[in-house]
Image: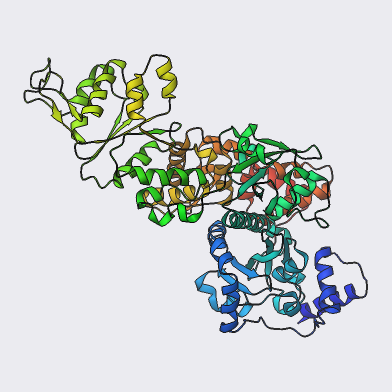
Length: 639
């Protein structure tokens, strides 16, 4: 009761004009609660859950957004798993239309209003994460006694707005705790995560609505352009802006030197903001290296851009459901992979030779196996690495040998790998490394569907589907006289190209899948900590999927408490985390002002629940350094 009286007295003092230590966004909301909404802090109001019929109406109106946002909610919920957070997706009226929470606490969550159907409008509930976010359109944390109504002061609510493609606020993503550490800075990480998730939901919504138009995505860093872009805009065939994410509208306004609050970019030509027009878009697709895809604002600023071509109308595209399962499971929605998968599905049941292009480790054998599993062929899948078999053995290994064909040959002869694939699929990996002398013999197998064993006379028929792969440019090898031109054209009847891992937009989907699969194979549960996830996202992956699998296997084997930390990752990630991930915190800790240094260290300690070892690990220093700084700055852990 004393705490409630103190809270009410503080609100009354703010109303009278007294200065407050609260954030300005909280003070302004308190004033709206009294002046506009006519709420009384002395009359607490229990959380309100709308009737079922009304909830159905709200959910039906938000059905499309719920479907698009659900994946983002689930990803965010996994990131904060075990920390007792509740996720709410509220519509523009403040009604929760989707939520994720711990089933063990459902009764408490419903009582607190952290539940499906709860209404968090500012006019009903007072200052709160969802309601105040709807009014201001800004991301914020309303922490404990920031709430206007004393009913909600135990809660900590962090919310971020979600805008539609026209720039109108359409929803709010909120992450809340029934109870939390006292310092408000303990929710800084939550604010970062919920803001990033809202941005990704806006991007997914734009891509879904504007798939038949040009979409231009932006990042200030080339490393994150294709993995996690900051903003996006959609353009029509004349180069006029059809829609944007919120970040896209702000970015364009800044680049064009205009006030985004006074001038909407919708309907304006892209050339008003950037030094480019519609004809420049093809030069910004994946065909060029990321670092070369630069565009310049009218104010002289530089941005990295990725243009995505209009997709054919849905009636002419093979729906995702029509893809054979082995092929469909190769990606989580990356546009380049989706195009390749559609083509692969059409080729899977044919006998047309397929040549797979891709960097080392990019998943060429995974794709070849998926093609075989989708082919309906009853024979085996036989994979041959042409670079791994010694040159003096490769002929007999591939074609087999007749009885007594050479010294050491078996008395009955032996079937080769090509014949072993009869009725199935032969996968020739690194075909560019096959000895030139053997290439003519392979050409006969492809052309005539028959082979002659070493030392044999009579040809043997074989029914095989041939898939080959190489990280070499076979055309270049042909030009250099190292690869037969006629064989190249036989193998390259159809081609499929795998993008390198660093360019795939579904990296986090692939990462989650691999962690789950490798953990099951190892017989122990494992999940990624946010810091480990960030370290993996930041890595350039020169070894592609093969390198990622090795990194995940190592992390699963080393992790304690079922959670993968940066220290469980290979050296490349640990060094990167130590060198770059804590850089912002380390810069703050070296701030010239003791007050700024104290605030930065306090924020890190609060974010780690005052776990000194974890704080030291995130800062890239040892525990004694943290203890020494705490003593110098007179910081003591709360009881």
